Length: 203
Image 1 (tube, rainbow, N blue to C red):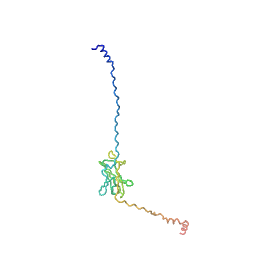
Image 2: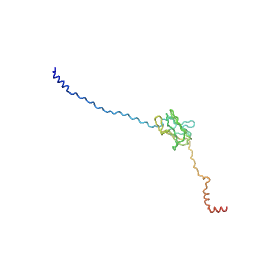
Image 3: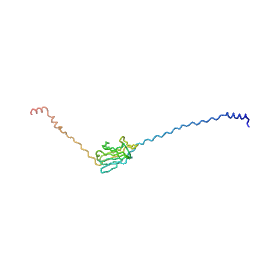
Image 4: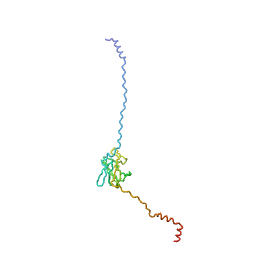
């Protein structure tokens, strides 16, 4: 049994001992927030041939001739042309160009629904034996649009059946009526004023 004095000393010595200092928490590591991935780039234009359901030349006798992008399609001079797209396009059009890249006058029609039906009727028959290009493109820019996608033009080479007309003969120069013949003009200039006065006196 401890004596009172010894017990008091033990209590005092125990109370005088310092309590251990708390360990500071480790500094928090800064974590950068994850950056959102950039949106994918908008898809670029693709060839319009991928949305063409039908491309045909409508020829006499209810003959429908498919048109080819790779080679020339032989057509009748009185042909009209039709292209059907697989969706709705508000700016698609057809245009016809001759070998000199001049636009051929024609009536164009677009029927827009679940599909887009484009027709082109030249104002006059095409020249036999000549070559043309039927172009499918956009009316505003060179690209046409279907939904939210854009498509580059498609070109159909055409050759018109028949032989080209013969070249026109060169026009020969004709002396205009009322114009003096060179020999007559020279003869009139050879008469001197004296001879003209003498001739007047004799008359």
